[in-house]
Amino acid sequence: MHLSMMVNKKFTAFTLTADITVSGDRVGIFGTSGSGKSTFVSMLAGLLIPDNGEIVLDGECLFSSSKGINLRPEQRRIAMVFQQHCLFPHLSVKNNLLYGFKRCPAKYRTINFDTLVTVLKLEGLLDRGVTKLSGGEKQRVALGRAILANPRLLLMDEPLSALDDSLRFQIIPYLKSVSEQFGIPYLFISHSIVEMRLMTDTVLFFENGTMMEQTSSEQLARKRIGNSPVGYINLLQLGQSRQVDGLYSYGCGAGELLISAGNEKSEALFELSSKDIMLFKKHPEAISARNLLKCTVISTFESGNRVGVELAYGEQRLIAEVVKQAANELNIVVGSELYAAIKASAFRRIR
Amino acid sequence: MISLAPSDYDAIRLSLQVAIAATILSLPFGFAVAYLITFVQFRGKVFLEVVVNLPLTLPPVVIGYFLLLFLGKKGWLGSLLNDAGMRLIFTLKAAVIASAVVGFPLLVRSLRIAMEGIDPQLINASRTLGACCYDTLLTVILPLSLPGLVAGSSLMFARSLGEFGATIIVAGNIPSVTQTIPMAIYEYASSPTSEMMALSLCLVSVAISMVVLYLHEIMAKKMARKA
Image 1: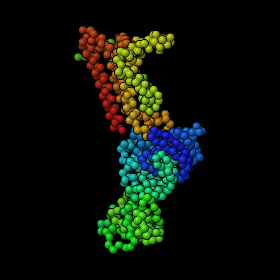
Image 2: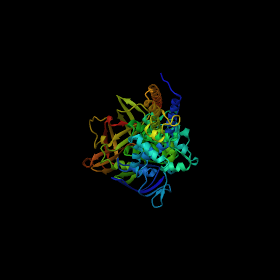
Image 3: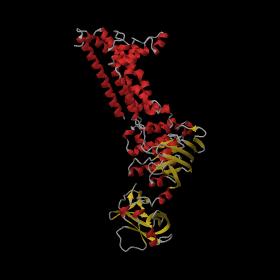
């Protein structure tokens, strides 16, 4: 996907200005509420007309104020997954799924209905009314409906914000795998850094109606450590566990991790805040934290009054944060060895 | 005991004919006006809303009189129709028009409430899934407006059954031609010897209204269950 968008849109109390050229199949749009993300995607989808400018997607001009071009939404082949599922309440699951498919010209129909239904595990739901579905099922149907329209670009406008945490992380693999499996590039809109890291490679950062920066989701997360109340969220994909004195022991990096919120499933995803990692220069004699990992510093970076410390524990990478003063006292430099202490209760299982 | 004269059966038939015709005639216009008011931004929208709702506040006799001026032999439309050999005044068509005008705001109001309840994002979703605006109108807006359509039609039908003031001015009270139930009751009530006949027609009127409201409730419940 190659998108070039140079547009302006003025509202009474808000003006959006975007001058963007971006390439990639997994692009994120990040910003706080009211930063202009939804306005931006509405203009791209053709649901909102810019005051002036030009939108070119994969070489085709969708909008140009100077040339008098404005393709209607149904001509753009850009499908959307909305914040609220937006399923048609008067249609069954099957008819919702087929809504876009039936309207897609035959030459663009490459996605097979049955394959998609299997991938999204919707087999048992097809004849149901959409009002009888759970939140996660509704969002899966909404995703399937958008994919079956065979779009050239998929816009996901905060599709996870209406779901609770456990559902959110259940849906993310579907969002990723479906668009990757069927070869549909996507623009993922969110105000969650974790979602951005899980879903995207390139991120456009919006603030007060202006695109401030184009960066990678990882860089964005690191830069925001200094301003974030939750710090940097480390995501740890861990395998099979075994029980040790009421805790769960997972093989990780060069050793093992003891986690209180574990389970006996073959795979689990945990998050760990950079704030929950305490660093020691030498081995502490006695400590209540159940995990003491001998790590090597592989990089450091500054954000506000904090220093982010990237640690290697075998193959596992962890980001910890300390204030500048502590970084100086501990003499944290690339290559130095540190002990990272982490409480067993600091890990939060998200899948 | 209900006793009905042959002319009463005509009045019942004519009342049903007028109510059905007025409701069916108004549906497309009511839908179009409700759509315009709900979804389209244009100058003069407030004026349109005032004009549509005017029959709710005006005495029906006033509406009848305006219709008489408009449709009469010397009226703007009446003279044109007269030249073409068509006469509306004092015919059943005039009764249908009077009922349609008086009941129109009720239909529009119900449709509008239903349309305002449609999530605009559903319309956006439909457009991004490849539906043009007419397609969206037929496959999203119309089905989701159905509860309003049913409610508005029932209200309008019931209002048409009871229409008197405007109808008597433009259609008169001609037995077996334009005499509907309310006018037949009026005629019986004016005569001191026809109390029972008036009461019989009143009971028929109550029965028809109850059937209409009962059907409306059943349909509304059915649609609510479906949703």
